[in-house]
Length: 78
Image 1 (cartoon, rainbow, N blue to C red):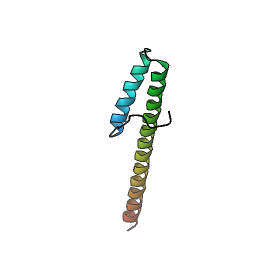
Image 2 (tube, rainbow, N blue to C red):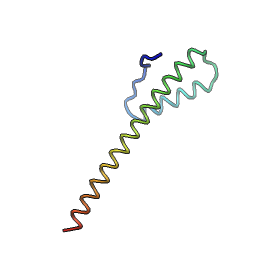
Image 3 (cartoon, helix red, strand yellow):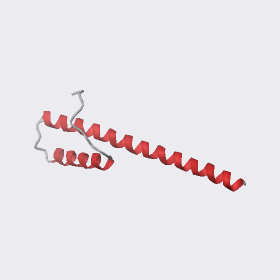
Image 4 (tube, one colour):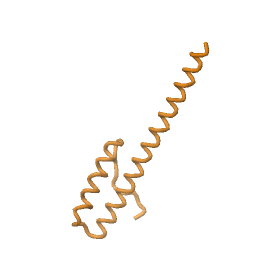
């Protein structure tokens, strides 16, 4: 089960959509144990991809905000 599952999301929204589909599928309760485990594994991988995308976006925002503060301080001091 350590090999990568069939996950090819292009962006955050696609990852979330795939994750929602997996959750719905698991909630239907008609999966075998093996299928449930594979679906759960895909869900974990998608969750990690989404968390990374959010962390990356947060970091980018922090960088942009700190750049803006530096620009403001430089322009304001003149």
